[in-house]
Image (cartoon, rainbow, N blue to C red; front, side):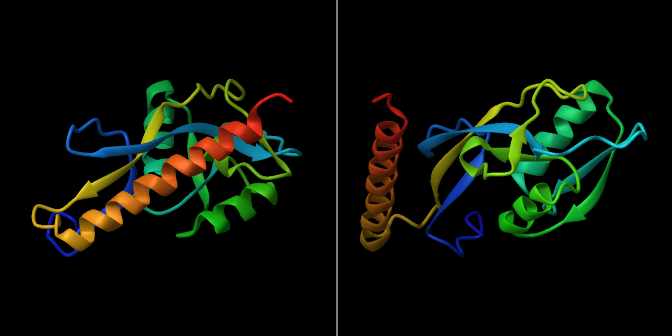
Length: 160
C-alpha cells in the first residue's frame, strides 16, 4: 500500500535497516507459551501464528528452519489478541515481543531446541509522494508519542 502510494505513511514492524525509515522503537522477539505448557510427545512442535506476511511468523519460521525443527500450525488468527488468547489457553508456542507478554505466559527461549530470536524495529515509513504538510505533521505526532511512551516505559521499569 505504501509502494502503491495508497497510504502516505505507515508504522510497520520489520527487520529492515533502510536509512529512509524512522525507527520508533526496537522490539525484542521471544518464543512464548502458556505457563502450564508442556510440549506433546510428538516430535512436531505446535505453533500459533498469524497468516503471512506477519513479521512474527516470518521470524519464527526462519528460526525453526535454521535448526531443522519439526513444527505444524495448530491455530491461526489475523489478530494478535487471538494469538495471545491461544497462547494463554496452552494450544502451542508462538512468537511475540516482550511487550506483548501477558499474565499466564512464559518465555521459552532456549527450551525445546528453540534459539533466541532477533530483534526488529517499529518504523515509520513514507510513500514516494506521501510527504505532504499534513502527513509530515502526523508523522511528527507519531514520533513524539513513541518517544513519550518509551520514556514512560523506562520510568516504570526503573528500580525504586
